[in-house]
Image (cartoon, rainbow, N blue to C red; front, side, top):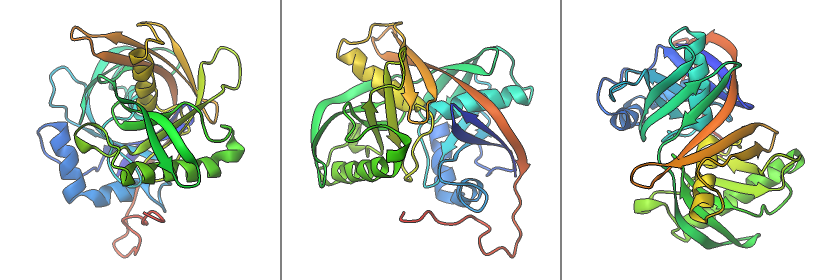
Length: 313
């Protein structure tokens, strides 16, 4: 399997460019399900140890179904599959440019949750226009053992998020282990109290907000992804969910920039527009850089050839 690695504001992406599973044609959502049902060993092989690590996010390039798209992309991580991935879309755009498949300008990716527009600029900068995002429930109270009652918004930005404005502890690297423990406790409490996204969808991303590290930045965040890894970037779908909440609360005007900082210091600049039906369409700008190219190998006698299971999952 041939892969190209990159990072987007610190968060890694591994793009499969050759040797991926034979998913056939059809809608990307159906092909993602086929990936999960029949070819999940490809996901574990690509992402998990000994070839990968928990923070790594995968992107499978495939033929698009939607007209006018330069590629179809299915995103996945150490434990499963994602609807969309903002940092991954930025990394995929820079990867396609590295391969000579696209140049500067505007392009479209087909994903399992809809078409995403990407604008490739100079200097490794990419702006993605995400799928329509929205606040599903406002000021939801959840009782979390050991933390008490937390209040947050349930929002969609391509994945489901529980957005908590006041982080339980300071958003600094020294607190990553404690923030991870707290976010996992929130995830469990949401499930136990049947707090879900639309149509009962699990809320599987937790996003804490706090004070930014320096002037000119609007917010700092910590995002825990399904699988137990925290997002090194400010999280593209999480930032989309955040500005959908701000827009719904009347705190951010269309076109007004929102600068989001990750816990490691990566920066996304977000804006939104409203489409003809009034839906919020976020755009996220960030930078990605190629970090390596590799051919992944599997020896037929390797007892861990398909990758190791994720501890505790």
